[in-house]
Image 1 (cartoon, one colour):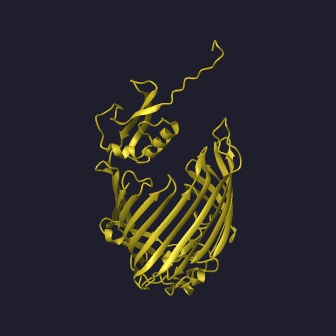
Image 2 (cartoon, rainbow, N blue to C red; image 1 turned 135 degrees about the vertical axis):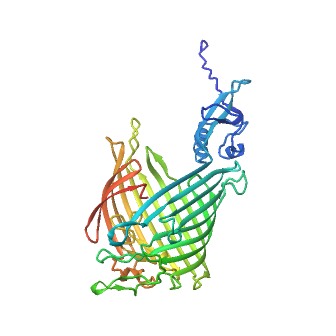
Image 3 (cartoon, rainbow, N blue to C red; image 1 turned 180 degrees about the vertical axis):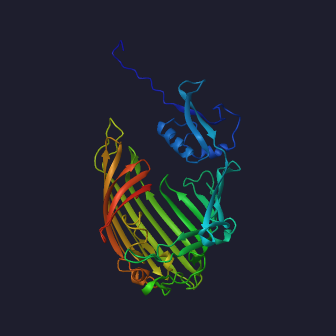
Length: 467
């Protein structure tokens, strides 16, 4: 400086060592952990001889924590004792318990004879869940769950799922982090296809049982963008409230009598279908969070292709495509963490080509189709189109955002092409629109929506995002 020259001494921070350091419950280092060090190495970009980068540290923190193997992750750069201009990187890890088991028990008491409870009417139900997050120390995972409303007669509604996940199935050097997942399952859900419209009396419920196996290969192009390919073998059975197999839907006729001349519930018409089909999916997601609200673009394409094996030799193609844009309308505040105003534009459509069963028809209405309606309240169709717009504005006091929305969905005149035309049989509209407003409170959305068909208004409290 005395000569007028400014000299800057720059230490680039070349990495000389990268080490995974396992910690005990008191945050003290231990000799080794249960997890193989290569599981950690494949989730970060640090390399000996390369320069230390703060963005690499942020990415490593995120990706290692997403393994769900650790409850504490820290990236600590230290000066090399032999050369202060170089850096040693320690990744501090405290492992979670690898095995978890949970159980819930629920007792239900149904009225016995004369309206009084008796021992026969007491039904013990509940669920059992277990998981192993780290088989053999390589991050392979095993999950299982069993649930029933009556352990004394579990065959009535037993639901189970056993899933195995194998990451990096093509090796540690795979840039797409290709994973393999397989599962066997049995589930029962209330079908929204065989549901009455708003002008109908109560309609007997139809439950759809699915039991089978599925194998999936997933390629991860980025943290959020991926492609999947699956093969599915399943048996689908439709049942009434008592658990008996039903082949047709029903409704109340004149005088309150039950009419069972409704749409066929399965492709075979017997109440049971056996299917083999392929599934494919492609997701392009470039969204990122700006002060807690997503900004960017998301495109999703899914397709199911039956190969004709199964009951009645079903051959069909069923696909959906959707795009959502989160458009930031103003800059975020540099002084506060208030989210910026955002415009959301959304469109989604789909079609079925071939002889797809009614339980796989597209259902219109519901929190993820057109708000203000129940799931399936607008109809069941072979083709559909939905579009929506939502404006989100910050609420300074609560440090969150309020929103107003408008949505519409339509069957494009294809409801009549679903076997038995359940939309007409259950007197549903086939299309509808809604508008409303709400506020986001953490993971909860509190909103009020009015439907454009009946002009009814309803308040909802829902978890998660609409888009």
